[in-house]
Length: 309
Ligand SMILES: [Zn+2]
Image (tube, rainbow, N blue to C red; front, side, top):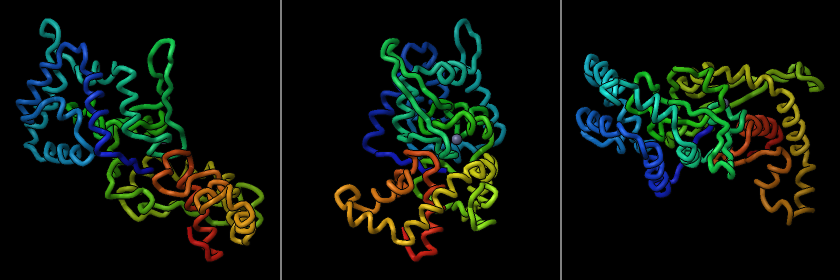
């Protein structure tokens, strides 16, 4: 799990554009609006544009309502009156399922990540098709709070997490404990990849086992739910490379290189990228796959040489 950060100032403009994009030319927004006013005393726009720190509170308050009222409100939001009195799960079937491509791009901009925040194994991408003047996205939008239980949040920007299709499918309707936008909990502190060397030669993938140590029981449950340990065991080849490079660094070879090429590798971050092909700082981990994995393996190996990263 990789944390997603956001800039409070910048997100307001993107959220406004996102709301405009998903609601333009939609005829029955007025009917959703009535329900929002009736049950939540706020506009639909407010619910769509809830900030990361507000969305959890909104959900918790709703959970605390009387059970029968919760059921009734869920039902109402799934049965929006549309043309000639027909009822439709309009937020999900129209606003979400037929979301314009530029709206998906706004979600992508908000998330500001290049990799899936659930697994950090796959890239999430979006490209512009200039000829057709639309975006083509290579990711799924996972509903962090399920659209079945929280239909009113089904297009709320910060309830939509750009994930790889594999994670979205495996996660399904499960509720995760860790919200990627929760700035109070850094992914880096909540679990660590570790390894056990079975054969010191490290000449084949059978010579090493990959494990995960958790400092947070909620994250543990999340990660087991998406089979993170098993998936990362497919990357033993990467782990072996990282260990070998870290040993090389630990033995001092990289430092002499750094001294000689000071202009090219001016600091630790650059040197780390050159050696491990990945990012050192946690805030950059979402830029490339396997970044936390690489960091944890390198850190553990280097610790044996008394080197801290
Ligand atoms: Zn994923």
